[in-house]
Image (cartoon, rainbow, N blue to C red; front, side, top):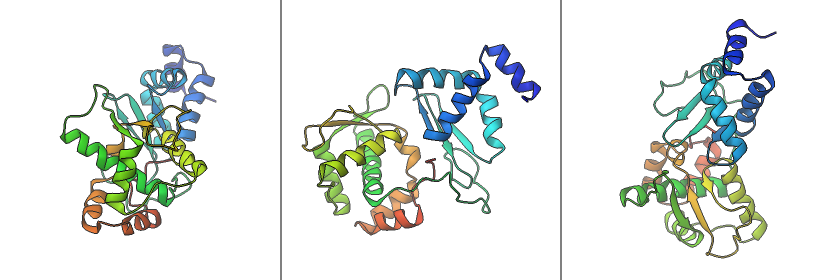
Length: 228
């Protein structure tokens, strides 16, 4: 049975219970809503704007917090215990349960490089009006080699899976039929990469200067624990 405030909010906004459930379930499944990702995501994001208080109340019961970035039109869930930019520190006793999503070493390495390349483009004023930075696959391959001493996966299937995963996390935007077996592919880095990778992690990277940090981040979750 619905509580009265939620029932009233749904009626006021002319949103059905099933539509509210769709919004909550999509956030739980993907951990993020990005309005410009697709028509469906646009509709769900706009529904969130109308019911943001009710959605926040729902997740607050589980100590799951939401970060809404209206400028770039996205919402991301943060599991219990995560450090959320612009929010108070999480309680030390919070757990690292099943809401957390672990990244493999290829994914960790590429996420670090995406953040560094985004920061570089930001300093050089190469960010478009929507906050995206466009990089070629070739430049990302060079960056990951120079910064971490690693290479992109050689196998086409592994490389495709890597960028598919990053796209699922809404950290990049690229054509699904893009060929990743050459350097001709172009990738847009989403501005939410800034909130996904902590400044502390970047500082550690500048100190390490090699791929050891990738293993540490993979083992100790040095990236912001924001994936669900």
